[in-house]
Amino acid sequence: MPLRAKVASSVSRTAAALSRAAGRGDGSVIGGWIGLKIDPDLLAHLAAGRAIALVSGTNGKTTTTRLTAAAVGVLGRVATNSFGANMPTGHTSALAKAGTTPYAVLEVDEHYLAQVLEATEPHVVALLNLSRDQLDRAKEVAMMAQLWRAALVRHPSVRVVANADDPMVVWAATPPALRSNQVEPPAVTWFSAGQRWHDDSWVCPECGSPIERMSDQWWCTGCPLRRPEPQWVVEDDGVVDPAGDWHKVVLQLPGRVNLGNAATALAVAAEFGVRPTDAVSRLGGVASVAGRYAQVVRDGRTVRLLLAKNPASWLEAFDMADMAPTLLSINARDPDGLDTSWLFDVDFAPLRGRQVLITGDRAYDLAVRLDVNGVPFQHVRTFADAVANVPPGRLEVIANYTAFQDIRAELDRVN
Image (tube, rainbow, N blue to C red; front, side):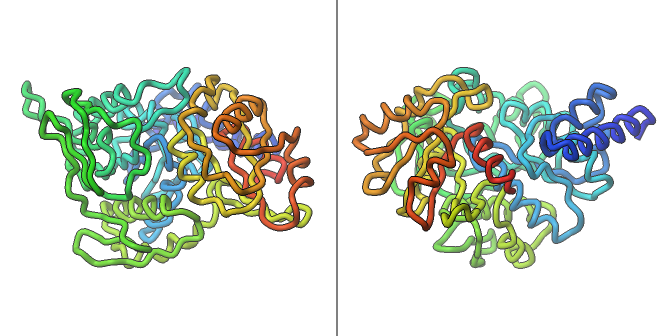
């Protein structure tokens, strides 16, 4: 690297280490922020010479990145932003901290995918899903798909691993060749993990016609856009690879959605030449991801943390949670989005029949929503109050982003 980049990288590592030592966080943002101030091209310099995978989507990015890093680890050391700092500052900090590695697997915020593609020149990009999120400041879903599509057109050599079950992702991943210079669209490997949330993809992004669904198939009623045939498929408790071989997947992570994340990880690792038979056993070593799914014993209660930040992820969280006392926590700070109207897109009926407690900055908004859904609840001021108000045994905690981090901090920043 140029001297300026070397200095910037060194300062980045030092700043991150000081942040961790001071208890101000894991240093995954501040280090990159300072490094980029010294050298705005630092991310590109750090990425050079590595085979890189980028993982992006509305939901599941952090978990899929962690699983993919484990799978690619079959080949050697992997740099990754394992704590979920998924903007260029986080990528810069992660690569600087890792030092020289042959591989990197980076989670990327969907808004920043085009910028990070430009800086890192990845070998493969994984596109997971697109749904509504942070309504007051995030782009509308079809607009995000259009940004992805335009970014991939500019990088025709990148391999794409994409979700065949999400019409928005399929449309974004298969842009037409540019007539002006005959650039071919990227090569795409399709995976199928299922898509339970359909409410952001009833209208075709290509022509505006309705999208019809039957079983696991979907198609546009007005143009040729339809579900492609996937090469990687979740089947029972395993994954079928492109050769038709079935691989049993044993995870410590709950829910069928994580089987889909595992299928994605195996598909991405295969783009680096990793055989699924070599990678699948490594996936079971992932127990929690930046606090997600972590289980902690507190005062005789086994507390499990689940992150849910938008309607699609709440649907999956209800599928993962056991029939046990459940604490819901909602904030509306800047990282969450200030608009809580999305709560009315979530069906809270699966919570009926269990003890439900609510807390957080916007607990009263949640209270109104639960009342409309006919779900009895108890309001508590703090996480400690919630623990005190449930019997010994399991306590499920489902929280949006900053509420999740608040509770994680009370549990000593469990990872």
